[in-house]
Image (cartoon, rainbow, N blue to C red; front, side, top):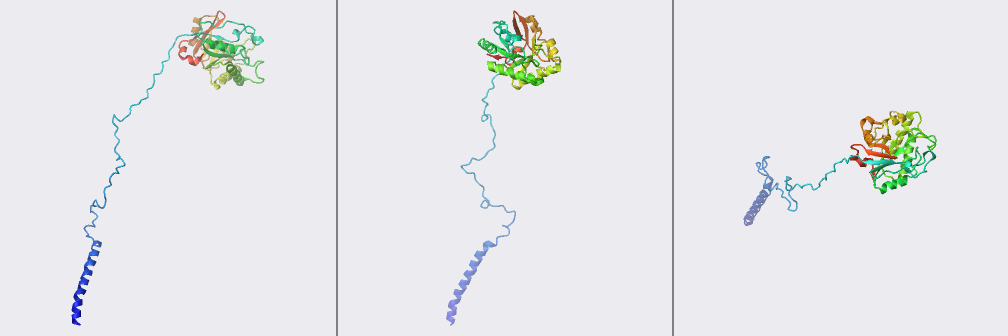
Length: 313
């Protein structure tokens, strides 16, 4: 029995020693040194590795443009043409009196008067046969004549109060507006192109205005509005006396075409001055009558803006 104890005891001791060593080795990582747990410890690169840039993605850099990288603008702004005053231009105006003799309404039969002579660079064509709502009987042929001579062209219309040709019961501004609409239809039918329509404000023989200047002024205002609503500029043809006798102190302050009657070119040019203002506008054209023709001249400076006053055929 003793011999058996001696044999077992060393073996048992060896086993117990091995267990102690294994147990000590497993518990060692769970009890780290207190110094290594200090909050001031600097993490090693194995704990927080520094990221590296992906080779397929470029690393952003601060954009610092240099003179070589800034593109030079390639757009060039062309020089605008400088308006040029070509001086005074001569022209004429025509309407029903220049139609072949015997045309038109009984009160306004055409007379076959001569058309402008070759010195004319422009022509202003009348749209009416005297009063409103009656068209110039040879408007289309006069437009064709102006086109064939490659003239600068504009239009004018006589404005009138109520007459037997007016729509029944229509007065005031509406009467003027409808006259403008009628005349616009006439010029379009004749193929007449113009940037402006001049309002001829004066007494109309056989179809004269009434004595109420305020009522007359309303008609003229309506006509001006009718043209401008349709996209046309307007101006006034008259003299200070004739205009005031019809509409009083109505001031449209639009461009003016000033009549000088049976006088001369020199007098027509004098009418361009400020002392011949009709209704507060600037003088653009002066007119005089000579050799049975209505002759016209542009006022000083007006030729700088020819497209404003005329259409070029």
